[in-house]
Image (tube, rainbow, N blue to C red; front, side, top):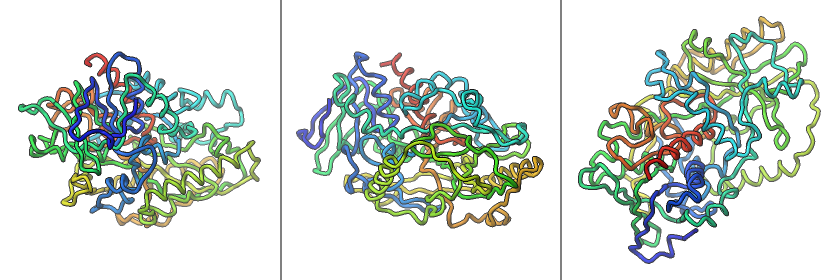
Length: 509
């Protein structure tokens, strides 16, 4: 069922068993998990079914720390969320990503990689990847041409990825949501406030607003924030009528630990002779799985560095060359341009092409960011068209991130040299000792943290079951709960975490 909230009579009351706030990958997948479950699910989406300037403007904010992309461009405010510009890269987090690492302050999840295994398997069909495994041996057994570089596996390994079509949740799952008998989707329904009981121990209702000035009330037994790491923190901080610091923020943790993946060109690999590189090659429309080079957990521990991977590319990726400062603030045109480019490439994709042997490759790194409480989302003094405080991002990255990128590539370079297959030349910026970042520093639009998971309410916003500390019926889905960022794109892991939360809620609602 679908209702445009702009058609509701002012002051309408909508009631259900479960209210999900945000219809991106997390919100849509959770709603689908409740299809035909005998419960009335309210799914709130602030935008419509397509990108619009008025909706994107609600995501406009300011950056006061490390330069970052325009906030209204790095997130999409319509049904399907940021899957509307997702590249489709899918992989799982490594076991060490969940572990406490004494050289990484504030690291460690209260769950393990093994705890998420069944949910990873269930998440894979949502993003339409062919397999639920990321073991390179499985793919190599089927295709002998997927040969790894002849390097010491105690230091370097092949991190596998699968490519989603990519799945645009707003297109693929629209009919299932709209035609569902127990899921009620409301578009143009922006949450303006979250109200609790007098003891501030339970959410009683949320207020939704639209540009026409109307406001409505949504009541439910349980509420799930699924608006992304920035919006989830914004909603909690702005709900400060009954809790002056914001909901779930007694310990001043909401909004802190904002994390991204650093992406930029870090090195070049020059081979002495052409080698089989099919395992590391991607060709859009043809390639369904590939690998990037990564440093083993044991080597990371020895070097005391963060987790990261490096892709071997025939040429530099366009967005990495531009960096955050070269990106347009026109969110609508960005989406349309990206979709047009995607359509052109898909139309041109055919059988695999046989590339001429190459001996030079650009290395594009993706490095996790250490969780830093001073890297945070705050509320601005400015307000949007619906009266909500805009956000202020203070993104902070430091010496550990840069040293980790350098030592990842120095380790790889040493192994390439020992194997006698070539050499690796680090980028000039990486060789300087100053904590300066180059102009082409990019990031993945992978917003994580801000409502981190920790059993201690003084250290986290949600508990091990992703329930906001102190609020028995308010929960958070998606990558906002991640205590650390890992090295892989977060999409598959945020889906796994969402499915885990969904199962937990089914025992309560």
